[in-house]
Image (cartoon, rainbow, N blue to C red; front, side, top):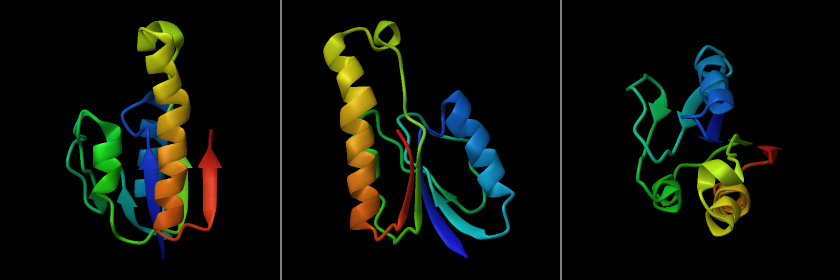
Amino acid sequence: MSQVLLTGATGLVGGHLLRLLQNEPRISTIAAPTRRPLAPAEGVFNPHDPQLTDALAQVVDPVDIVFCCLGTTRREAGSKEAFVHADYTLVVDTALTGKRLGAQTYAGG
């Protein structure tokens, strides 16, 4: 049984992947830190904080696999700085969190 870290679960791709993972018998738990809360679901740990890095910090249990489904557009982000934060900084934070938690597999941007 694998433990998964998934970022971007409130978005289109991440939300779809979350539903697939919830129905996958080889997945025992899913840590899905988000800025906005998800609907409660069995097997899903959802720390949420407007600052995603703070929600990521709440994930402390080991994970095997990391899926990063974060992404935005510069227009949606509102500024170049916000775009870089969402499409670079948070992606790196996700990868580093996965590494810290023992993940051997990373998929995403």
